[in-house]
Length: 574
Image (tube, rainbow, N blue to C red; front, top):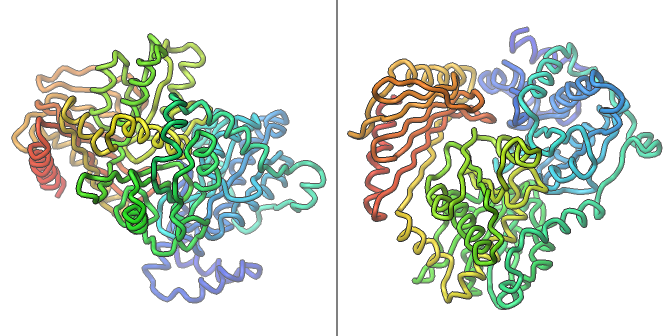
């Protein structure tokens, strides 16, 4: 059907959700209607994410049920043992998240599939933990992470607690596309499911188990005991799920002198005063900075609404606060982990850290200094989870120490298989205490690392191509980069071109070899000064992302290089 026919079909549905029907009737702009109905929501390894509202290209009860039906049919095909293992379900503080989560349970229940669902909002990393804790076959997290309040999303997890692998995700997509009537998906009665034990409510039992494991994150308990009662810092969950476990994790680690930003302390899907509840943006720290100055806080820490990402701002000598990038936070964390274990004599001989291919070389340089191998994987935390699985099953001789992506996601201990802001919150508090023990702030610590390893700068440029023509524009730009094959950027020669779509790397003199990494639609260029540039389409949004990483002996020189490379990249992309 055309988008107009699909729109009319929705209008004619006799039992359409009343709220969606009212929204549908209020839609007058043809472009808005076309965008909502021209194609089904994309479902990939990261699940789906989009604006809430009526339409097949929107997050609503029908698209959520459709996605869950795809998972249920897959589980049906795998047999009763898989169905008995079931699905763990969680949700964040966004509007309709609870409703979507319980509809997921009802769809699964109609197939006789066991479900475990939280009694209230919980962080994404606790959903990852719950999948492993319950030995579930899969997990569902209703969240749009750090997107604005108008968005929601559906993340699906595999049995290891990492995001669903591509093979299974593709199978689910196939089953979703075979569903003929989005309005005729069967729903079980939830009270009957509860009475029959087909639905189990999770709560304090899983919280307690998670927090017991979280004790492993602390490396030097003496630091927390000595400085945890005096060190001042601000914590904001940005109206999301972070306070649920974050406050308890901090206190059990020995940190009691933190202040929770009161306006942002409670879950609230409106995210008042936060157009983007995203801890990588300065505006997310406006209230925390004000509070930090009032109490003279050493550091400000914020978690995004589903508490899988974390950002922080550090106090400078003049009393102002400077936001650290995700790459800088990760590098500080990795340095502390390796240094603390080295001092304690507990650094394994086969220690390894894992990062995405678009993350900083700053951390790689730190790892090399400690004799620790840095493993590069594709973007998406499931690839870091895959590395952990290889280490634990003996497929590779490494001990996992730390994993991260530049997009403010970090994992310290692998009892979770996704980025975990609760673990990161606890570790960052310990790091702040470490620098305080040296009569330094975390800002001083970052500067110390720059002076030792060089000044590293990274930048991510996201170009949005929304609407019907968006995918074609993104594909066209990727095609241009491949076919025209740039040889220089800003006067620097490309010495290595990596094309992850065909698993090849090519040197400037034409030698071609394998990358040895799964295929993905990513291009990466390494230049003669060790600067690197990468291009990839976003997996969850209509965006083409450009990444630049460079370094120099001074901060000014690194800034200058970044500006030159950014201009050269944008010029080529026009």
